[in-house]
Amino acid sequence: MSKKGNILSGMRPSGKLHLGNYVGALENWVALQDQYQNYHLVADWHVLTTNATQPEKIFQDSIDMVIDWIGAGLDPSKSPMFIQSKIKEHAELHLLFSMLVTVNRLERNPTVKEQAKELHLEAIMSYGHLGYPVLQAADILIYKANLVPVGEDQAPHVELTREIARRFNKLYGNVFPIPEVKLTSFSRLPGTDGKKMSKSVGNIILLSDEPDVILKTLRKAVTDPQKVRKGDPGRPDVCLIFNYHEKFNSDETGKIAQGCRSGALGCVECKENLGKKLIDFLEPFRKNFKYYDNRRDDIIDILKDGEKKAREVAQETMSDVYEAMNFG
Ligand code: TRP
Image (spheres, rainbow, N blue to C red):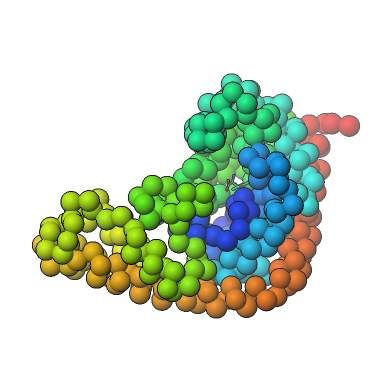
């Protein structure tokens, strides 16, 4: 089948993935891998922006994350996956791109601003942290990606990538496509406390969580605060459990909304029901995770193979780049 174009996407390796990672991006990677030529990178250099002090953890976290990618259906024979820092050309292209973007433009990036605020880095942000979206632009454009499936917090970086690609093309000649962002229909799944799903907050469900852990986590999850006990009428539109039903139990949402509103359906039962659906949904993934967890060397081989394929493309793009620039 002829491909519609190239996809590049990646994630920072933070170990095992949670439902938000899946629903926000990975689901799209898997869904699109037959239509596009996909490349997927483990963004290990990106981790250093916020965590430069513990580089020794990054490799194992990378393997854990790739196990989850593959276990959730990403097929390495179709979609090369590799570690960013192994392809030095990304750093080289980042250097060239860094001349094409102003500091002021980088300071206006809402995702970087939010991160700075969350981590209290406003006055002490590193040069590398401020510039990581430029590295991301290099990650994307070195594979001449047409489409970038990511979570919505990454959309500003794709916008910057488009600007850099246009600027490069205008200055030196047409080398890069102008990539589009691709969000999932559920680009934000809240954590079990109703806030953004995040490992550091502890409001997550991992793709690899065992059934009893999933049920326990759901029991503690917040619901509509006005619905205190069964019989009270609830408001599905403000309830995060209903939000989860929409994603993982879409056939029953009509019935659930009605039961919740009338009070006939209590939160305990509603959560049990969701838990079962979620456990069923994750069951095939969980089997795959266990399989690969015992074969971590296979994952290393898969990454090496991906690296070879990625390097070839990256080197070719760098020749195009220098040729267009009449450089050297
Ligand atoms: N910044 C992304 C994240 O925090 C990871 C990333 C690095 C990425 N390079 C990329 C995502 C290129 C998409 C495309 O998860």
